[in-house]
Image (cartoon, rainbow, N blue to C red; front, side, top):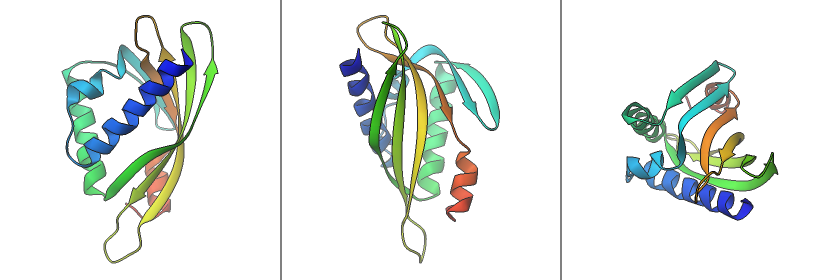
Length: 143
């Protein structure tokens, strides 16, 4: 399972990079996720379905990231904590680079903890836990 989860997040990273360039296939993005998911942040907990609404929200999210100057996002580290033969937590340390007008680029490191399930040939993300992204962006003067 570990090899498959690593491949999943390599795809995730590559899709994120393409999305930041404005070159994204929303079906590729949706293929990373299970049919339903849960997300937890300091703003609360939400649940959702992997449907057309999710694709729209993700497309809008990447458009927002481009608008605020997100230039690049890549994985610094991936650590996997197995739960059982079908589930794990993938602890991903990300690094994002933001372009700011008339200022130096800003680099922000952050972590997201993804809940992953593998029932078939490929693992899928069925949840994630992350920190306060908006506060972090404000703290670094991005927004």
